[in-house]
Amino acid sequence: MMPLLRTAASSTKFAHRSSGCMATISAFQQQHQQRAQSTLVVAEPTDGSALSPSTLSAITAASKLHSGPISLLTFSSGNVDVPSSVSSVIRASAVGNSSLLAETITDAVVTANKKYGYSHIVASATKFGANYIGRAGAQLGVSPISDVVEVLSDDTFVRPLYAGNALAKVVAKNSPLKLISIRPTAFDKAEVGNKSAATESLDVPQNEHTEWIMESVSKSERPDLSSASVVVSGGRGMKSGENFVLLEALADKLGGAIGASRAAVDAGFVPNDMQVGQTGKVVAPDLYIAVGISGAIQHLSGMKDSKTIVAINKDGDAPIFQVADFGLKADLFDAVPELTGKL
Image (cartoon, rainbow, N blue to C red; front, top):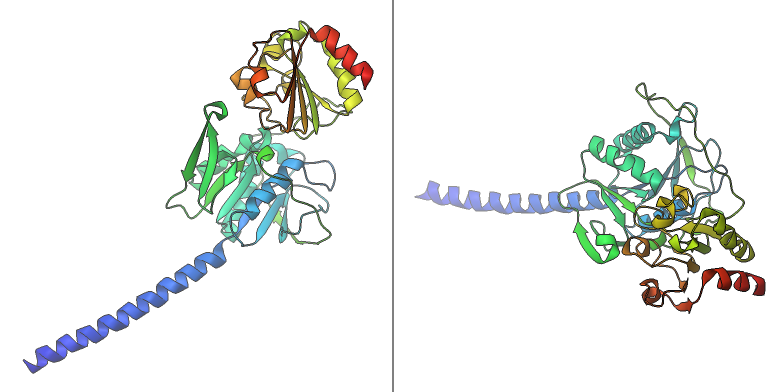
């Protein structure tokens, strides 16, 4: 019996030691996990050293994930001005203008993640971000969480459903890497300071399957629609594309951008890049003036976060008046020129 008792005691002692060892390992793993929390923000291309407004919003969203370091991936050939929350800048090199290709951007993201092992990768939910985030998710083996409007924790996010009529709380479980795209209008733009971040180069494998040929960009002296503080939009009530000159005159007086509803775009009044709504651009200016727009749910989902909404429509029952802060029931062809003349 004595050997049995000694064996039991020995087993008990071993169990205590194992328990203590497991607790130590668990604490080490938790501490290592906290140290490993880091984020890669993918910057959208710009012409100069200034970051795009959507990238600054993505940096703000990244700062809400955890207290770990934030790295910025950019294809800019020169130095970029970054907010103080960015600890390092990774400058990816690509052949020619191939940095605009989804394949090239994805290769850069995958290469950077393989080198540093990020816990989060953040992109902007813009046309640029949507072009590569699905491909990046497939190569990284994670499911992207798109169009995030609120960060609740490092693994819990809020995103809109049904054209913004419902909000879903999404939890990313059992995934060491979270790949998300954020709605730029839902987050403030990070302030750029005088801090200089460490910069390093990243060689991106040359893409052999696709080739960048060219791009056709419409130049305008007006502010960019996605980031303008004032937006004047027209709908089917404008009756023709020629009548948009009325909105252009008003926008010029206010220093704003020109937008349009899907109905106006589908009617051929204006090009697609002016469309505001669920399938167009999402805007949140300080002032949004909707002219001749009925207020379909697809359009409202793209502008309802505007600070002040003004509606001009001769139909007093138009849904746009339900979300407008100020409404004017009048013929737009009389009201808009008079408003422009008084500014």
